[in-house]
Image (cartoon, rainbow, N blue to C red; front, side, top):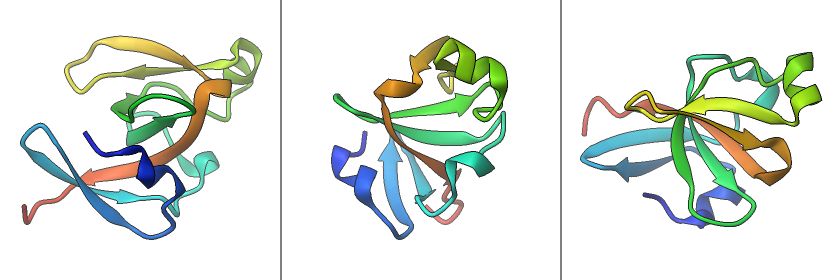
Length: 97
């Protein structure tokens, strides 16, 4: 898993998660993320997590709940409080690997 240094990145970078390389684009705004996007979540404290966004992060119900629904790449669902998220970066599998 990538280090927490990526949370302040401003240019695209690569990370390896398991045996797969991903391109990470920190320039994509949080408001542009959509359900189904694979993202790298940098919590305020702790290690980053690769996850799939399960709901519109801009939706009123997300703001009201104060948490966003995510899932692991294996399909395990979980929620993360918005206040605990330092950064969200859009990712894509690096086909060249």
